[in-house]
Image 1 (cartoon, helix red, strand yellow):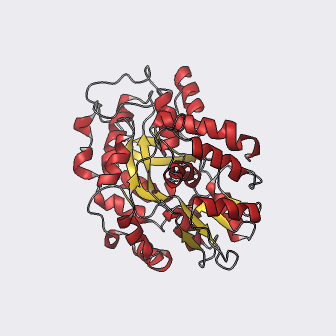
Image 2: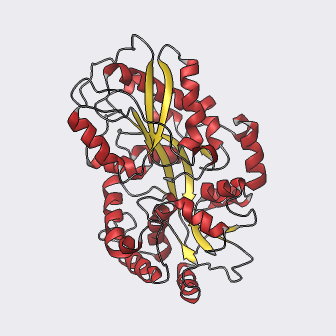
Image 3: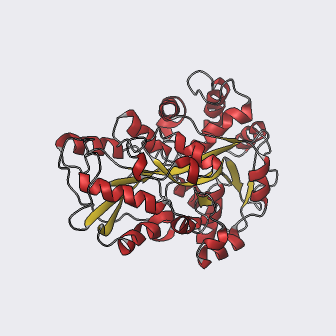
Length: 396
């Protein structure tokens, strides 16, 4: 996903971050030195993943009080953060130590050369990806070109989520969905892909549903997809800047069908934003487009902070901390690493998923193909084309 948060305690932002750059971006000692005294770590949440990982992050200073004194959290929209980081790096005044977010911000940062190379540069300081990750999570991790470490993973979507009392004939193919939107104008909804995990998953899943020429090439292989999205857009009045708004409008009756994912289906129903009775549907030719959230370190952090951040990444990828990422279904299942069953999760997570999870998900995950998302540069291109040709004029 990359996901944008609608989650309970994380719906609003936090306080400003701290920290200071002490040398040219990306220049480090061979072996980062442990700080002389505990440091404050400022974390910027771009995709809503703080909903899943705030507890593991806050556990770190408790477990390693000589390394870190506290964690400070802020939030930022994915399209805006890279330019902010770049400006701080140019001025030598970086106040961001760790970025957590999805492929959108990871891709933009790779494109603009913002991130510290974690692998192979610091392979001796970090877990070996092949040893720890679930197979599909490893494929997601590899998209980061060593500049981000996958932190949470899920099969994602794209799914249609709908209210059964309002949708009597549920579309079962892309063609049926298009016809339904023509008969029910402005009752179907999805978020701007550059800001919405489900929106992004939707446009990346369509080439499989439509049998397009090359699902991995939005510039030369998505002729059917772009034509479909333009026609579909004639029946959509606006595109919100995040997924949370789509959930609210489904819940309050403004929309009848929205684009969703496993986590965005479960968590807003746990929170009561969407009625528990909401249902999900896949379309003919369905392939999962997997998703993950990553940990990224901006160039410009000091050597002593780098040592702490690498240790923090190791901490976040232990099974004990990964078990918290089941959360309340926000990124279902959640853990990116092997051997983290639901039974390891907090009791509140187990109860939420028992009540609001869907038994059919296990079979859907097992029986349908899984595809990695676009590579970072292709994803940036897809966002640009969507903004220019599909929804840029109607985004809010």
